[in-house]
Amino acid sequence: MSSQRDRLVGAGTQVATEVSINFGSSIAGLLIPVVGSVVVVAVRQVVIAAAVLPFYRPRRAELTWRRLWPALALGVVLAAMNLSFYEAVGRLGLGIAATIEFLGPFALALAGSRRLLDAACAVAAAAGVVLLTGTEGAIDPVGVALALTAAASWAAYILLTRQVATRLPGLEGLSVASVVSMVLTVPIALALIDVSRIDWRIAVLLLAAGVLSSAVPYSLDTFILRRITPRLYAVITSVGPVIATAFGVLVLGERFSPVQLAGIVIVCLAAGITIATQRDHPRSELESAAESIP
Image 1: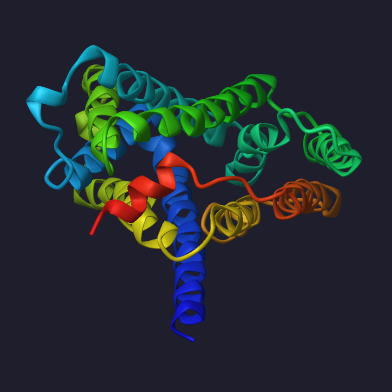
Image 2: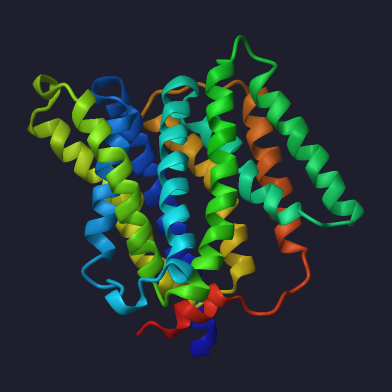
């Protein structure tokens, strides 16, 4: 009974983090026309660093190149993923950008598969993207390229996170990556920021976007992974584009045709079916690391 309750709590918390991430991204969508995507990303990286460094600071003796290189690469990928995604949001809107970005982890789930079902899901996802981007007016091709860059970066982020978990325990690797990402983005943001456009309301929204998109989900991921399986975690994550679309409509005033909405749903269903029907794999180092954190 307790185990069942833990799974329900974990799944509910994961849904809450998806809501938090996408609500934060919708707030970022409001801020991008005012301060620019680089400033939004820089604030997010500062929030990540502030959230994890006090608790998961690596020991100096462990900071060797062999242990550290995946975390350094993860920091670069983290900066690239967030910059390209928020630039895509500014050009395409949150719903479309989030759906295209999700192709990254979906492609990773398909990698090496020889199942006909997975091939069918891949074709369905491709058709969904065509419905989303190619049937209703002109879609910014630069925005699509940026969203695809974010997708590739997300896939790289997943692979590097697995590498980091074998070298640095818990979230220590993420703390190193957050510092690298912050160093890459903050100087650019300081060079580009128009201070005259920053008032207390914009500052509060920037902080809210950072907390909702970074501090809340990262702080809860360990709690979640100790209660639900990676498969259920991934299936719940696959509804992220639908949640993003809802916030795009409610917060950003985005409008979607029935054909575009069908495209978003098709992509999410294809990903969810692929992940839900995969065979169980041995426990990953990331899960073991998560479970080792009190």
